Image 1 (cartoon, helix red, strand yellow):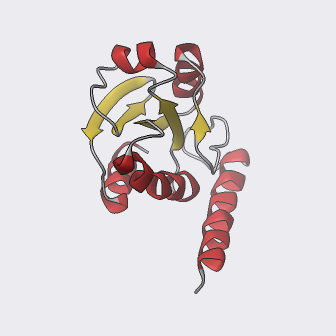
Image 2 (cartoon, one colour; image 1 turned 180 degrees about the horizontal axis):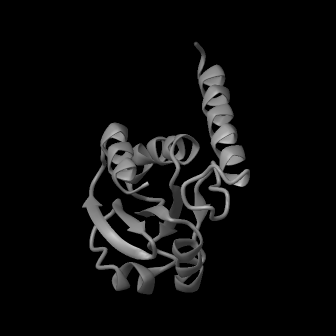
Amino acid sequence: MSDTDELERIREQKRERLERTADGGGDDGGDPVPDEPIHVEGASHLDDLTDRYGVVLVDFYADWCGPCQMLEPIVESLAAETDAAVAKVDVDANQALASQYGVRGVPTILLFDDGEAVEQMVGVQQEAQLAGLIEQYA
């Protein structure tokens, strides 16, 4: 199966889950979860996202960071495949926000559940590990 076919299969699964949620068959009845990462524009934007979606995985990254670039396809895949909203925070553009959450190195992953930060990991993580973590809260 080609990468394009695999992405289309993942998107179809996500669409089906979103349709079930929209029909009242979802678990939280909140807004449909985007299938692409959301680029955070500041603290209030992140607060809005964590309030709007039940589970939110946030990737604190920097464009110049090699490990962050390695994590990028994993983050995109998680956005397409999981029930969590996925957000990205550029630490260079949002230094105060990174400081607020104690981000001292990139990449740093935070997982929010019902508006509260519940998990934090520093460094590149495996997709299966992150997906399993999301499933614990979704």
